[in-house]
Image (cartoon, rainbow, N blue to C red; front, side, top):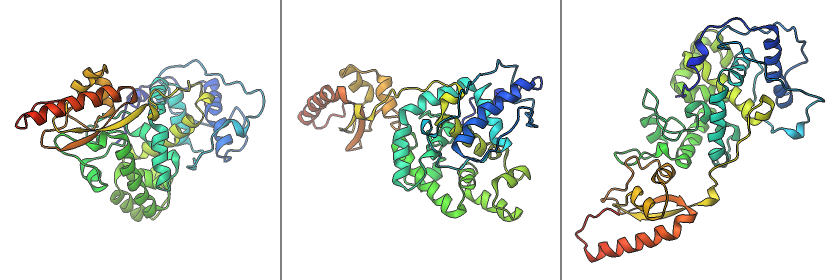
Amino acid sequence: MPLREAQKSSQAKSPAPCQAQRQTSWLHFGAPLILFVGALVPFIASSSLKLSSHEIQKPQPPLTIRIQKPLQVKSTKPLSIAVDPVDEVRHWVNFYSTTGRGTFQRWLNRSSERIIEIQKILASQGLPKDLAYMVMIESGFQVNAVSPKKAVGPWQFMKPTGKRFGLTINEWLDERRNYSKSSVAAAKYLKVLFQEFQDWKLATASYNAGENYIKRITRNHDTKSFWRLSRAGALYDETRDYVPKFLAALVIAKAPHLYGFKIPSPTINKADTTHIWVPGGTHLDLIAVTAGLSPKELRELNAELIRGYVPHYVSQFRIQIPLKASRPISAYLRRTIAARERTPDSNSTF
């Protein structure tokens, strides 16, 4: 279920955009799509593009993109998901580039930490890497995101669906909060959805609304066109917006500089972390302090441990730690395991 960090602000009424704003919105969206998709034809500045009054909360200074010469294909990344240059996508590109600009920059910043890892998992399942940008719309790349409907984690799995695709969810462990494991589950689910619909717009809509719902409305309306279903009012409002939001996020995220966004540097490098097995009774905060780490840092790396510790009745559990802390943590665990062996009836917490 998508996180609505910015959607509410888009509902405020405002004066109709001026001609310069219309022209800017074409530049924001048109130029990259001509480049990426090759589906737009040349247009004139006085085009009949209509922007609804709620797209821009208040008059915005135009974001100028000066193009001195035609953009070169080599300066961009190709799209692996086809993006239709329709008004619904254009609306959300304009929104994320203006009113929702701050929110989208935060999504970009967070995505830099995990996007490569998620893309590798998707590719290993034979899926397009660009599906990784669904996480922007699902959770804004927040590992602990919880929706009003109790969907959890970066991929916003409901409990039954998470368990259906192999995630463990119990009183102390919730693998929906684990980036790697939830991405594997999401890849399996998306593969099933694509096999059913043979169309990525319908597959992603099904991820949001459920495959049985999308099956039913495609049958009732005798069409497998997402846009026809959307314009016929057949979809939930959330699902109607979900697909164009994802496509708009994909277009911007593949070339953020074209929209004036800062390109973030990753703050988490997987090469800087490692895994270690710990016994039951291990508390993350205690080993963090012992190793000179922030408890918050260790909890974020192991968000699936929802209580922050491994219960005593679990024999051992694999946690992720910063590579720099592997020696002090290993030494600490050896000492505490030796102490427990000397007093085998003890239930002390590590």
